[in-house]
Figure 1 (cartoon, rainbow, N blue to C red):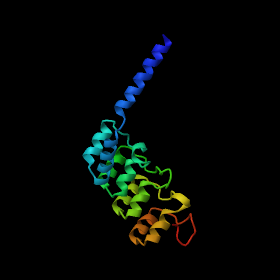
Figure 2 (figure 1 turned 180 degrees about the horizontal axis):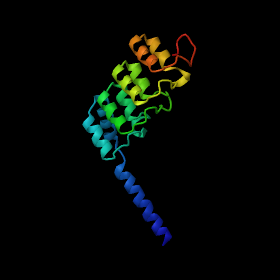
Figure 3 (figure 1 turned 180 degrees about the vertical axis):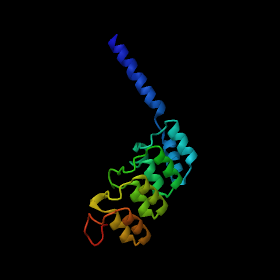
Figure 4 (figure 1 turned 90 degrees about the vertical axis):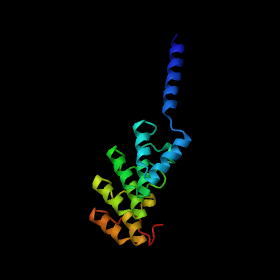
Length: 163
């Protein structure tokens, strides 16, 4: 009897997780919506539980916030932050955060919003690289000013070029 109950529980649990698992097509559509600023699709997928706000598995290790910030999609970024997205999640390999991706992309409006929302301007990227160093190397003086005003430090790697 215990074996039957255990088997039924296992079947029920696997069925319920399969019902909410994101398919490959849904994953592609969701990533596209994040990149293109399709807030309606992003909202639908989050509200229906197709994907969690900080889920990374179907997105190659990136969070929704990182993908939207990397493309300068301010309205999507605002929506995700309002849904408690992790502002300081670092990709497992690159160690990039949403703020770092937005800054390297030159999206000053997204960077300022993330800073105002509480993103850490001093988290290091892979190789102990400071964001401020990278932005200075890019020559984006406006972004440097935003980061310095927010308290960013130019510490970390000390090579002439960090990359």
